[in-house]
Amino acid sequence: MLLSAKFENIYSFKEETRILFTASKSDQLPLHVSRAEKRDDISILRMGLIYGANASGKSNIIKCLGIIKSFALNGWSHKRYDYFKMTKEPKERSSIELEFKIDGHFFAYGIAFSKGGLLEEWLYKTGRRNDIMIFERKRIGDDWENVIAPQFLKEEGSQFLNYLIEGTPTKGTFLNEYIERNGKGIDAIKLTRKWFENLNIIFPETHRTDFPFRVVSDTQFKTVMRELLEYFGTGISDICRVESKPEELNIPDRIRQKIEENLEGKNSDTGAVIHNNSRFIFAEKDESKNLKWYELKTVHKKAGDDSDFIFDLFEESDGTSRLFDFIPMLIDMRTNDAVYVIDEIDRSLHPMLTLKLLEMYNNLLRDNSQMQLICTTHESNLLSTAPIRLDEIWFVEKDKQGESHLSSLCEYKPRENIQKGYLNGRYGAIPFFGELNNIHWGDAKQK
Image 1 (cartoon, rainbow, N blue to C red):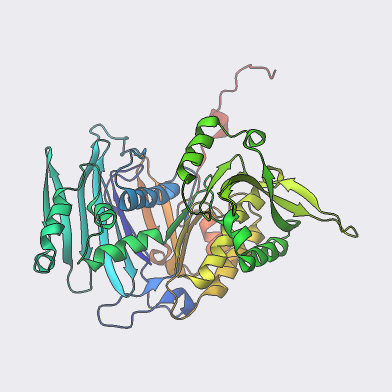
Image 2: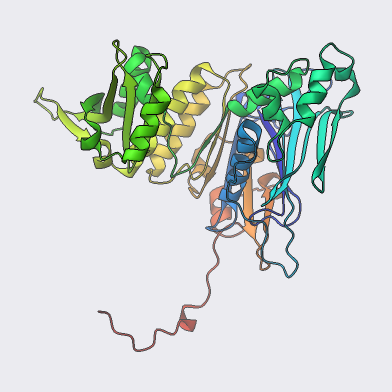
């Protein structure tokens, strides 16, 4: 579970900015809180909604999570980002740190970097009373100053640990190097890696690429997905895959060749998925290890007719396309304690459908669950209709200097209808418009 996130000098965050998902003492919606049970434990919220006007910085929070996840799992990958630019003296050093809980332990993992690569990396075990360093790395010129906590260097294999951290590539992370080179002795690194693997980030323009195989191989998954698509009123009665030839799917030769090379000699259950223009195209080997190409399609029926009408996915609405991300999420959360972060959960969805998604998530919560759902949204109706606590609501607002600032609804202690107060500007984080009379339309004629 995500406990907090800190950002500095990245996108619209100039000074160090922190968002917290620690729970207040309120007894409202108790299942929304993973309550502290031990002395050093911390109560964490299982849901969070982040509001703000367009260009306020909401999506920048999610982008920062994506950057640090990429570092944690893959090392430096030249991922595009921008440091804070709206200043006369811009700095190129940016930093992100996440504090999280996994398997009853709390950790803080952070990175500092510039467009030239990684500058610092650190991992701490955190607690109410003190923090314990696991490792730290700091770049000084072309060299690295690396430190591993002494307790890990007393164990057998400490020489290999020193070899690993000293041999970590300049643009790599020790977190990734330790896993890739089968490091041993530091369970905190393995837990941290596991947490990032279970951190799922969904942007409006990105899509899950695992479910096409599950539709084929997992009968229960396909049944639940089909039933939920029907429940949400999409008109889809089933999902199927249709075999096609690569040339019919308009797959560029270089991509097709790369996929074929990657799958050559691998197990028959190995495959690859391409998502392009709302199409799911995937390749896998049959029982004879021959590579086959398929496209995922939807099935519709009309009343009084048993015929199947096959549709391409790009023929479905944008809202239905988003459900192909959200439904696997709900299925996943039913059995796994995953963390999902969604940018613009309401994009292309009817307000009632967005509300229903949150209600369904609420119904999945259990006393001992470590699942978590954090979303950015513009949908103000949720403030008065959704099952949500005051401490789960955050606002993002950009000032006249272009800096984004965060505030919690708890800071305002609202006594009114929250939705009404938000739309009236009581909490900020809404668009403010200039004078329409100041627009100089001129004599331009419409063509």
